[in-house]
Length: 530
Image (cartoon, rainbow, N blue to C red; front, side):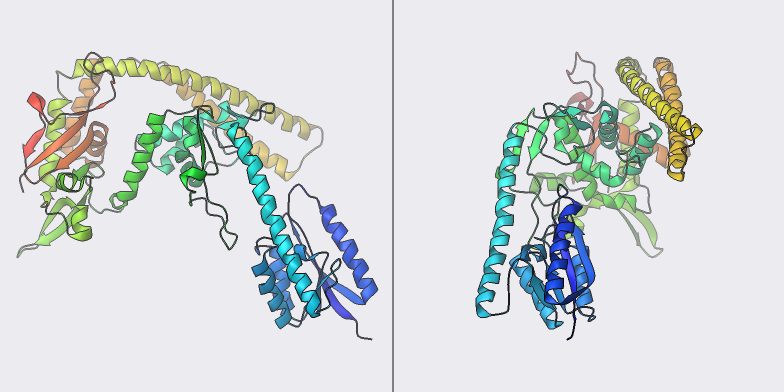
């Protein structure tokens, strides 16, 4: 008698289940083989994998091996172990059949008769119904939990932890600095690499002990929960192929949003400023690739498009060669003009507009009349920062104490004869972290001891700015421009310059506001020279 070769396929779908589920399925399959004359030649097992998707490593390996003639049948404990999706079930059964491999079930007697085909179809439909109905009931329970602003599962966002009693979010003070530094640095114009370096120098790590990466920053900067808004059911569910895309958002009526449902780490104003900067950076990626250095990149916009279309188009740097001698001309021109030829605003020579902006900075900000006001406000700002530095110093001291304790524990373990490469690598990492924390503490102490900002210091800064202009040190000039210019709006007949000024509270209740200086006696308006 010919002994038929068989493979076993086992699966359990949840991390809450255990390997005993696989063992129980295998016992039933082995008993089936011995009673029906099958020789078990290979076992495929997927742990914590759902059957509503075909993205299961051992399952795909089994389908691939069926083409090689390694076995004559695939035996499962129940059909729902094979698949709970009717389309996937039909698709892969067809592949097995094309490879002359039978699919057998221990608990369901399917002999290939017309009646068994109806039974098999019914069982598959019931399995899919069970899976989708269970998902619906689970979502119903999670929504009720969400309405109470409680944790619904998974890792909480960086900066938060879960209270073990109330199951609500609370601020993780060890991670709070990650959020505050990331948002404030990005708003101030720093890129991902600079933020990552700053976090690394301050001793911050991911929850797995690794350096914080760009993907983590991307998620932090777009997470509205840090403003105190509890959000649930924001991203779309899996598609028809079982793939999840966190960038796909659900309709607003399906999303649960509760103001004040989360502890607040950053202000809504800071969050909105960051979102505006993210949107702006998406439109201005060309400035990072430009061969010429443009002082006003990211700041200069087209006023004609603003008037005619109601929204801004950034003006782009442009280089061209013209005339008999092919002279080089560097200009700014409207991006809308390049895209759809809709804008009639002429190009503006770079040297004209950049010289004008630098002249205005010297007139309005870097002059003897402004220096006393700036000195007073910078001193007040420094006093506020000192409070922040003190809080950060306390956090660093606490982190250093925890690190020293971990080092002592490992040293004691090694002294008692417990030693392995992983333990020694961890010790090296902790020693590196200790050095960085100690350095950060020294830097914070130095910041606490800083002298107040005086008028003399500002005059030195003014002198340095003039030196940079005289030496044509464009990178340094660009830093000054970005610090004090909010926007340059170019029209056909004139240019408007909006400066960032820190006005005294008697003039303006918001000292850090942006002030438009295009009207009245202090107008920063000039005719355009083409």
